Image (cartoon, rainbow, N blue to C red; front, side, top):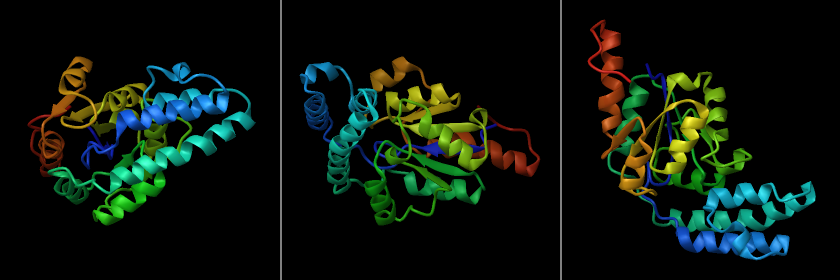
Length: 231
């Protein structure tokens, strides 16, 4: 039985608005500039991969320079996207229903703390999460499992009791690396074809399907009835 739910932010709870190709090109150039090499060194890496490769690029002093150079770029694209973010259909009702059922929730996002704090407050969902883990709280972004593990530790639960709800291949990779199940809502960062090929535990067309898949068994259990369905 799933006992806690972890949510991604952009593409999952809000629509995907990051200028992905533009941001990744700028990040490659900036990282290469610190190293004094060509941007092709970071070819084929997405925004999360660029960060991880940059943080493995040498001495602590060099890593600090990378962080000082790349961090503001990520923040700038976060804040730009935040000007256009809106809640995806079903996001607020799902969070409210989980809270009513006493299901702990956490936010695990590659968005930085500054933009995440701003948008959660602006959209009125800042009090819906027991734990918020942003890019600034971990050494590696998703698809590394660092953020999920940090959230689970804070919630006092295990990966086998958790469901990660996201929209991307990075969310699938992070959930699998952490050992928890994963549901993907279509229409976010990754294409439907890519998502289905990766075979997450659940593919959703609407966030409200989380309630149908998870909350019905919880309500049956509380009422002492047999579970209609479970993971």
